[in-house]
Image (cartoon, rainbow, N blue to C red):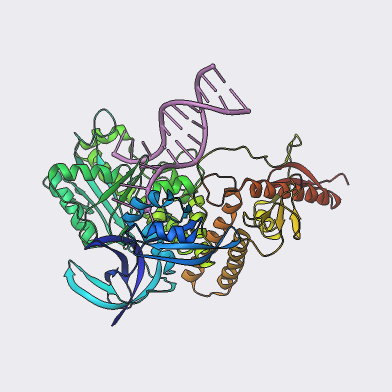
Length: 583
DNA sequence: AGCCCACGGGG
DNA sequence: GTGTACGTGGGCT
């Protein structure tokens, strides 16, 4: 048996002889660079069933084509219960059979039927994308595919998750230009006129169908040759991460359609597969197997609070300098000119793509740390809001603790009593102190043990009683959410202390992003209790947290007044105060 | 105050 | 893809 170590970049599954085979895509380490695809045929999909009656249920299930039915204990909302674990042959069978199983007379409910197969694998095998993973098995084939070594590997025992890697990843940004005299280019009419690239390894090129005197440019006969060069460049640069700006909705769909018209296969994947675009309503996602495509635009919208999120504006915000710019409507005139006007377009295209690389270098470390904590692929984590990130983190934790994740609710809105607001004292204030409660909500969750699985009806047990509402939360044992929040807080303290001791700059930087990621996840949780799309949704928990928050806020304001402060404004999770100088 | 709708961002 | 779906700010009633 051989052993391979690699950074786990991505994961999916394929079907071979009606069997689902997990594929781990990685960047090999500890030897000359190259990519690996590690296959695991041994994992099978499953769901849980909560039956009314076990014998009836086992009977009814025997009619269906199932691989295995086993009885086991799982914690569900704080109670240890018996469930049936049903293993099926193929992930698609779950899609086909889940309604049938749910509708059986003997079945009360089905559980964890909507955890995608590859996510199930990551959770059950305790693997974390962007970490180093070790696999044992045999090399199926090792070919030289230009110019990187591609290794196909068969996993023969459980893969192991090792430490986080500090390996530098190869990032390549790209950007296309097209133009139309009347406005936005139309994919049916307007050809791609330029494609520019920039990498974190120093690669910078602008390819075009027109000539330029600038040294970073290269000219191609026609659009078809240009797109071929695009494919060649991605294969030869062999990036782990591909970056774009609005590339999910503009660059990739555009180039895909142009390539189709010209008959150029867009074989961009490490396995030779072509670009796929998932069209989920307004949530487009362009996918390349074995490489992580990240559209920084969605990232910027989520992470920067700005009035708008054009590349120019975001660049200015992050780096304080202006990027050279050509207004959209002038691209056409520049392109149809010669000399300086045209050269300016080349320079603009390069500036754009270089800006994307710089933004990527600055913003990706946080997404990578989130990925390492959440434990889902970077591709997915980069496209999730913080609520979904937390949810997947919790689903993993639930598995670790032997809990079943709650099913998804519907989607409905509900008014929650807001926080306490003190109308501001009019006037111009100086030397203001701000007291922030957001960091205190996690402590309230822990100290009052606020969790759906600790909420009780009667008060025969020792419990915390919520002000205003009177909701009761068991004091022991610790609830699921409080224990997770506790671990997150402890972890963050631990990471911060390691960070302060570390002498290595890049390690310190990584740890800083890690503690930032932990902070984000922690501070997201309390707000999720009143999102009906959240699996651990609980209006009682939500109200309890804000009720205790108001309680603490008022008490803290009173206390601050005794120490000579004068609160001038308060809202929900904090208050502003000044030192009362008259005293 | 609530509901519906359009828009973002890319050239 | 173990499928079904974004967030928000502005205008309107």
